[in-house]
Image (cartoon, rainbow over all chains, first blue to last red; front, side, top):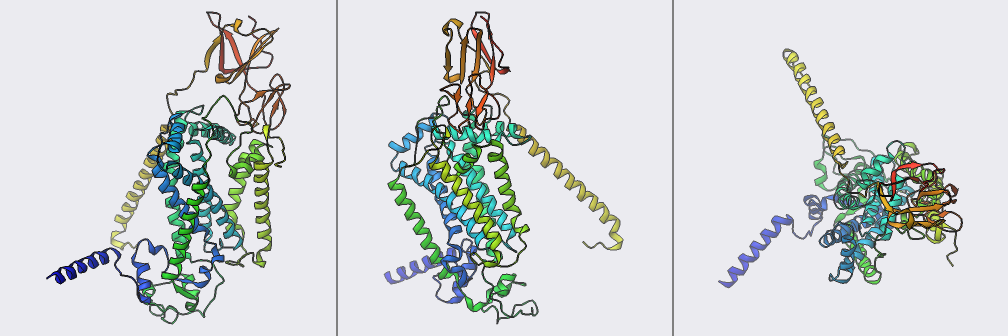
Length: 416
Length: 156
Ligand code: FES
């Protein structure tokens, strides 16, 4: 009697589990492929991946780390929204509440701030990695553009987040930022008016930045990240192409000798990357890719916790429109631009950023050199790599100068 | 698109109908985008007014420079008369401070001379001079929507 009840209950539980996951713990290679294909979330991965793509140094995992950071930012950001009031002074007070009243409030705010800083850095490094490995080449040109858009969105998210605490840093960063927008030819003044919701920074500005930060920009990021990852999946990861002899399609079915697992053979025409790769150089995504991803995610989350427990996110005095701090510095990722703006607002604030973005977007269509995709610093790409590295170096030098070598009235100081 | 010969005329009509639909969709989407953009421009601004009084001329001792910080305005009372200079840096909007001769900006190091002309740094134009006037009650009135040249003086 009892035995029957236990057996039946176990049976139901398994049935429910199977109805959700469809496939139990995969024990055979066939199941390992089926698991990846039958789950919406796992389907981001191919069933099998090349060994090359699994090597940590092929991608450094930077795309995954950015995605994990974005996830952490979403979760912590949603939590912060429960205590945050988007109104001048109230906003600052809610920061103080998070700091002193709400249990773990300060940790959540720290995590949000540090993940945001990390995301800017990691997304930028991801762009560098993709350039240095030549991974924007055909067929990935458009995905490079999606990636550039995601970098811009990351910066926009960080910038809109900056106003929200309504402290001195926030207020003056927005003052300078929106004034830079006003230097745009033709539409500058209108853009500034739309951003601020008026002529001066006030409640309207805060509300606009809040909506941008919490709804509009994250929504765009989610859409573009989905597109970005989907294209990576469809185009395959770049890598030295280990080609096998080209095979003829026979009756719409791919010959089993090239693709050993049958599920992929359901597709009429496998994409080029699938067709060209040597199947013996591939392993199953479950567990080889999945476990690595879990490990990276774990490492990122643990690191963020440690940093957030040790270091508090800065909060300056409440915003004071009558007193500009001296020096008034932008967040670090804009200090290179601030250094440029110190020479000319139009050149540094409008011309150079526009030129850089335009060059990045045009890059995959200008660089017709087909060689060196998937290889770090390929010798066939020496010219491209040199130019890019030089620009990155200039950006880093400018940022360091703006961060460490500029003091009161933006005069040159020595950091020691 | 395959159209059988006997239905060709019908097909052309369908194409026209389809085109009309596309045009209508385009028009309505454009209208929607335009109205949304217009929606983003507020009709009422809850901002401090551009014209305001700053007190009696007697509150400003002769030969003095007063900084009204919440108005972001320097008020000069010189032998030739009153004038008001904005403290908003024309570069990117930081507050300039008086120091040494003229004004200094903390953000990117612009410097202005005593009458607000650019002495050094990235600021593209001189500091704004605002029109001053006397109200019926004899109070000083500033109008930040009206800028004047550096020869402006208000004799009281
Ligand atoms: S805002 Fe004054 S120098 Fe830039």
